Length: 291
Image 1 (cartoon, rainbow, N blue to C red):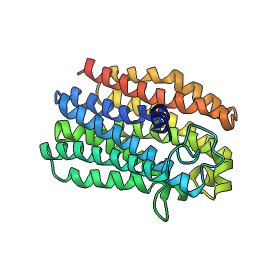
Image 2 (image 1 turned 90 degrees about the vertical axis):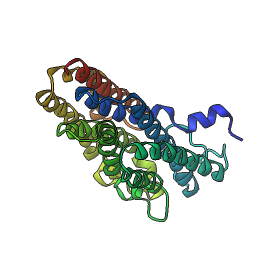
Image 3 (image 1 turned 45 degrees about the vertical axis):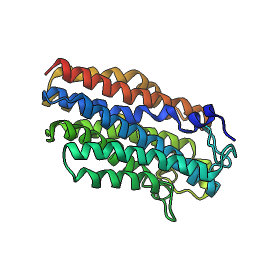
């Protein structure tokens, strides 16, 4: 039986910045528009965090029963390592999804009922990333869905539940956050190319190959930087405080471009996650100061 500490590790807490960042960035837009609502922001944060934990457990379960994690290089996997029964990990995933649905329903009641559909689609996307008979994560679509749900949907949803409107520049914020969320997965899949090929997992990294995946990572980081410039033009120069993310992102990009492989890429995931969080913190602070 897995210990409490192992269950926490299995939830992959180092991925949680990718859940916090879109809510922070979206709340920055609400602040700039004088529409910040703290309790709706907290509910949006809980939904985002629980969906992230849920998808982590769901991936642990689905990859584990397929044998994809048998020779994995990276964080602890509960099913693949034999520390927890598959049904227990699956139950943990659905418990997280259920809790996210409850908080999401509260947001829908207070704003618009069509958000229930968005929430349902988010949960389905989280499960079928590696779950089901034809998981889209095995078909090279993982990065697209991360960009959509942990970028566009998470940021724009946070903005909407507070403003009940979507300013045009909020899309720029969503693209920047989505690019960095996507970069985290690109780095993860770059590390796993050899084992994914052996397991028959056709991720985007497997399809692009080693060199193409490294280029994609760099492009995503540059795209996020370009969005900062465009946001600053559309709102306030203070938005450039998001450039505080440049240091960890530059270090991660340098490691990727230099050709690091296997375990040497694990720090890149942490650097990119920290970079995304700092990006969001900088935007939040800049939009608050410059309003």
